[in-house]
Image (cartoon, rainbow, N blue to C red; front, side, top):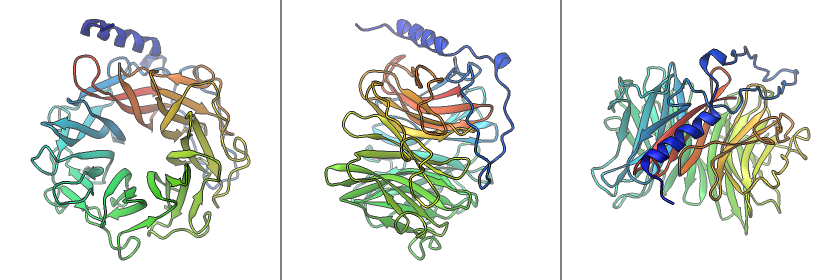
Length: 447
């Protein structure tokens, strides 16, 4: 059956209304949370509020903002909040090439007309259909500049490289001294694919991913040049485990140390890998085995996100091999499994929930954990909430699971915390409705 555009539009609206229903007048008040990192107080883990999982219908249209990207590829993979504006970064097709795509939204979920071309801006590195550049993360610097982080595929005789673009607050590309006219390509001597990144408190830029078959962590100066004071004098370091290893997520702990989660191919299995390094780019010997923790034999698992709990424990989310299910692990400060979490540091499996691939995770202000991802076949994107001690939170959604409709071909890629007990979700409706082409999607939801 093929639905008309008007029928599809009605389906989108009716589906979103079912999930919505929380207006500004009925919104819960924001709690004044106190950080417990480094204290002896156990973080509370309150049950989800009655609003948890409802779309915030004061945002966009029934809780969702959709931005046309054209083409049949792309979406939003990184989110940031800068003052009273929301930044969404990813890629979209333009004249046969893939370009960095950045959107700036108001707090009401509308494109900001003061930014770029009616709220969006794009960036490529060459006027060629063979120029393929993908942004996966975005952050802002103290002067209001915006840095999009990603990679550029092989181009002519050049290898795949780290790609950074500096946008001015009005959406134009530039900035005094940043790369070449606001763009920077960094070659580490192989093919580099960036899968996550951060703008650091001092405005330097940290990116992680894969260089050939090794995990890499690299730091650029605030002007987009490789920083020789990091992992001195190279500006980057690599880690090798098994036949290949890639970094998927990066975070900082309260001491400014770097935490990276990724996945290694070891024999016929995939293994979660977590590393910790000092702020200067040296592996921390007090963590795991010389700074590296590798998942145990017999566990076919993939890591997609790392974050810190309020008590300083390290939380890593991912999924299992075979018939994939979400999995969450929590580690103590020395890299050992946290025995107070799940089954010896590992979350319970979601038996019977269907096959799901994880994409991202956040630790909620009360200590709970939210993992987001996509069904392997057919069903809508999925959110799963866990309690502080690693159990699926049955008070959330249906037995801890909530599906969210983003469109006919909706997929989730990322999640981040927002103010007022809310989260932001980023993703895409790939080649979906209404009409042809791909839409970047940003959703705001009560949590």
